[in-house]
Length: 464
Image (cartoon, rainbow, N blue to C red; front, side, top):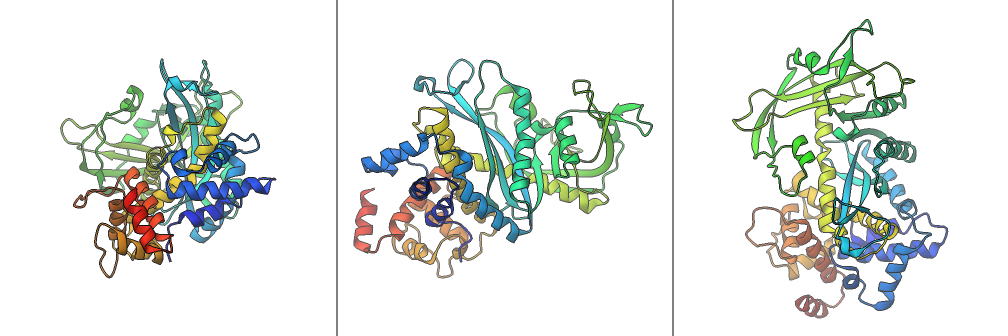
């Protein structure tokens, strides 16, 4: 049985939304099913009939439709998947949706001198079994910046969504994972006092307190005295400067693809409360810390170094490695954002106000997780059976109408590349299909597999 959702199964899940008006829930199911079949297409293309298109626009712009209402059914399904998975990771991060200024969309903020934007903060749930398998979206929050960016209120979103997910998924065992932006003394304190499990990357070299709670030092000095508990080799992907702002470039410099030889060590420190933090907070906060560093980077390459704060034990090398592996899973949410923006074309949506765009992003978020799950199976188990990613009916359609031959014992890799072939993926390409290609292939696979008449299917396919 396939572990990847189909458009129909996702629609049934979303149809259990928590709207008071059941008509809205049924409409959401219909909209989700059509969008999941063709995630990268425009709304007029997906909803070819004028009545269906108008109904979709009315749904997104309906004041009774909210992100929490949209995701009610999805959250119930995610909670069930989390119980089945056992221990889970919840990766939190923010992304920006940018639109051209000439659209004059209501309620969006400006991006420098041109363009409009709003922000989305997402909590992506992953299985913590080494596969990083997406289980769904645990929480969302949106906002737009005015002329005066409210940085302090924006920081609160991290803990708000941690609480939301933890309260919503009470029976699950959760470790929250966050990048450098979440390195805030008050947030770390709240996470620890709230009993939340976490791994958060450090952003700056903090002051630490000595055992007498009076003497101070630098975190970097304390970590520099540590001997490596374990050495590890890791493959680093290429990182370019294309499209990144100077702030992001400083935090994450460009680099070539290479094998890095990393040292890992761990200890416990007491962080000193920064002077800028409220005086009613404790003077110190004891946390476990894991350092990951590259002793001898290649010439011209910046050395890798991560400093991770964690609630988890670091008594031995295995504990430290566990914290590192959990943090490495954070990259999955960046891939999720690519699926949402590229595979689902979220920044191309012609909706003219903030609320409608937020509702659309919320509908597309589980669809992006569905795409991520399909693509992720190629990395997790490329030689696994094809039925891990497609239904028997879809496999029959791929064999009959696909552009690439599928072996008798079909694998995940063969099927994903065959789906990509339907979307225009080059036949002899070695790299997997991109998000747009995969989305187009899924659309055509749905058309091929859901018709009862083969001749009709073939004619419809040839005309697209």
